[in-house]
Length: 173
Ligand SMILES: NC(=O)c1ccc[n+]([C@@H]2O[C@H](COP(=O)([O-])OP(=O)(O)OC[C@H]3O[C@@H](n4cnc5c(N)ncnc54)[C@H](OP(=O)(O)O)[C@@H]3O)[C@@H](O)[C@H]2O)c1
Image (tube, rainbow, N blue to C red; front, side, top):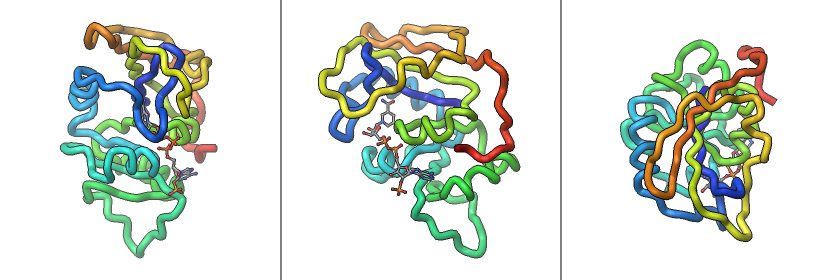
C-alpha cells in the first residue's frame, strides 16, 4: 500500500473537517499519481470530499457500518467496506492497480504497518489550531528517495520503507 498525505510545516492535515489550505498544483499532482488505481479512504474523508467518487479511480471507503451482501462486487466505482472485507481482497490481489491510502488520520493509523511507500506533500504553511496532525515520527521507518517542487509553496517527497517489513498477511491493528 502507498500512503499519500499533505502536511503543513507543523504536520497538520485537517482543520474543522477540511484541509486548511488550497494548493491546486498539489491536487493536480495527486490526481496524476492516483488515476487508474484504487484510493482507500475513511468515511470522514469521503464526507469531506462531498461524498462523490474521485474520477478515474476505484474508490474504497472504509467504514465499520457496512453490512456485506451475499457477494462482494469489486467492479463498482465506490465500495463501502469494513477492514474485514477490504483486507482479504487486498491480499488476494483483487484491488485494481496500485492501492493508495489517502487518509484521513484514522485510516493512516489503521493501515500504518502496511504502508510501504509514502508520497508526502509538504505545504509551506503553519496551521494554528488544527484538528488533526500526523505524528512527528510517522516517517521514521522511511527514507526519502526523490523530491520534486510541485509549486512555490509545496514540495512532494517520495519515501520508501527501509525498516524490516511487517507481515502483509496479518490483519491490520
Ligand atoms: N491533508 C491530507 O492529506 C488529508 C488527507 C485525507 C483527509 N484529510 C482530512 O482528514 C479528516 C478526516 O480524517 P479522520 O481521521 O477524522 O477520519 P477518516 O480517517 O477519514 O475516517 C474515519 C472513519 O473511518 C472509519 N473507520 C474507523 N475505524 C475503522 C475500522 N476499524 N474499520 C473500518 N472503518 C473504520 C469510521 O467510519 P464509520 O464511523 O462509518 O465506522 C471512521 O469514522 C478530514 O478533515 C479530511 O479533510 C486530510
